[in-house]
View (spheres, helix red, strand yellow):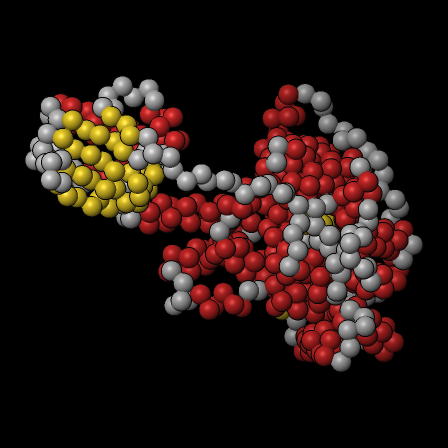
Length: 513
């Protein structure tokens, strides 16, 4: 239990100033995002802000990745918007609670390790698609409602002011680290641009123009829905998707931060923390959420490596809601927009362009496909799932082509087939085509020294080939089968002769998640 009470890793020195400043920067950047995501879902702004506080605090303390920031996210908002429209906010709270329970079960059952099945090209596509989404989502800040309420691009002086302030913010974020890294450049940019806007009375859109963030402590509230099977049938599909999307986005973000910080997080612990956070936020009027890749990157790029920054961000967010709403509502959206655009630039894997022409075309297409699905459908879970499926099919196809047979007849007149490559569902057809049952001598040996039977399709292929040779009145020997294959074959009575030669022992890497 002690490990859960530690706020940061005591094995490394914690820079408290950096952690606190990074947390403050993240808190400021979370406000417009949480508001925007709540509005996307058709909920009140405070629903998003409460989720950002409760989820951010719980995952910072109990999560499996120090430095990762969680809160209300667009991925969850897109999932629950139809439920909010059809059944109302109470059903949202109930679905979020159920999603939290599912996520906790996923962590307890140690399902976080399955994130290892996500190939690197899929990671590239996921990150690049998310970077594009972050960038495109900022373009709405350059639009203003017309007389009918429809958003139109700004023109004239409002557009020039907006562009100027955004570019100034980006310039500070880019240039300040080259002079000093004493304070996070994102925080300095927000403070400088906000001071200019407030001090000079520049007329530009502020946080308060989007919605008020004034509120109190998140109220405890049991979802007011009928506790019935009918309610479960309504919310379960949404809860399952929210849980899946949340875990996929959180675990992929965890892996990304692992690479950036050259440390390793704990996936299953993060699953439990995310589930606990959603369970709690559903009981405290929150919309649900998961890891926020943009804010996580802001946090890490600001120098944070411990849990303290996430705790500070969550607590400061609550302070802003309860006591500082009037001041925070004066922050110009241009400053926060500039921060998020720089996040999108930093998030994009520019190195992925080096894949073109150097990596297999299939990997390049997988990365592009995942990015395209992410951008077009805003469905991260579907994009990652599609990428994994495409990669698996490509892998199966490539391995299916690798099965070969070296053939020769020894001095005793026995024909040998030395099989090379895996025998599995994709290579069964090619395997069967290697044999000339009618033209072979009376005794045949199939040598699996350089092959491995991988699945039941392969086992069935062996049964069929033995049956074919038996019907032809010929003796077939299967040699050098691995112990796992022998276990599968022990009930295959038509196997004429099995010469057991021990295969190398393959050990699965220990699960440290």
